[in-house]
Image (cartoon, rainbow, N blue to C red; front, side):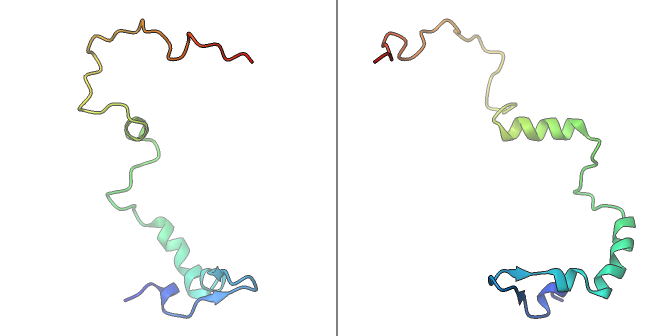
Length: 90
């Protein structure tokens, strides 16, 4: 069965934007909100106090902690800065 907000026509405001207010504020939805808040979260939801998960996701998102990268490999850090020989003065 389709979700409740898809079983009735979408209400549009004067700008033509879809409004969910009539659906969200309906008595049937408002009565279901308290019980939905008491249900245990699905297994896919990680608790808010899981810093290991959060840290791993941030590192993965920004390209760190990738299994393909040898982070302990020797690296030459004494390299000239690209374009350092050119002057940027007018």
